[in-house]
Length: 255
Image (tube, helix red, strand yellow):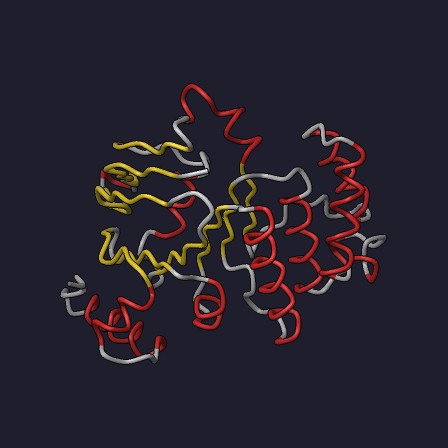
C-alpha cells in the first residue's frame, strides 16, 4: 500500500498562548512495498509526523492518504491494514503471557486460525519466540519485548508497518535478528515499512530510500545512493552528522 502525505502541518498549543510549529507543511510519497528510512535529529518532528500518519494525532492542516483512504472516513479500514511498533512503548498486555496477548490480537483482527498458525510458526523460527512466549512482557529483556511487539504487529498480515526505533537499546545479535526479520517481511509479504531510527546500521541494512526532516521541514526525499553522491562519500554516519550540524546553523536544506 502506498502513502501520500500532502502539506502536513501540526502546531502544538503551549501555556500562556504560545505555539510551537512541530511539522511545517511537508509533502512526500511512500510507494507500495518499499522500506523507507525516516530520520532527523531529536525534536525534528519525526514522531509527530508518524503519529499523524498512523491516526494518533490529527493534523492542523494537510492530509494523509493510505492507499486512497483517509482517517476521517476510513479509520477502521486503515487500522486493519497497518501495524505499529514504538520502541519505547509496548502494545502487549504487561502482566499476562505474550502468547495470550497474541491470541487477543488474533481475535481482535479476526485472523483465520490457519493464517495465525502459519505466522506463528514463521515468527517463532526467525525470532525465537519459544524462548519467552509464555512469560509476561514485564519479565522480558528489551530485545525479547521488541520481538514480541513485532509479532503482535504482524500477526494479522498488515500491508503497512510503522517502526519507531525498533532496535534501540538492543544487543548486537538481537539487532541483526530483527533486521533480518524486517527485511524478510518486506521481501516475502511486500509490506511497506516506514522506519525511524538513530542507528545508521539500520538504514544501511534495510533502506534504499530516505526521508529527512529538520525543525519540522522536509530537507531530503530520495535514495541513499543519491545522498552519498551529493556528499561524495559512502560514510552515511558522517553525512548525517553534517546534515544535523547544518540544521543547527540554519542551513540544512539538501540540494
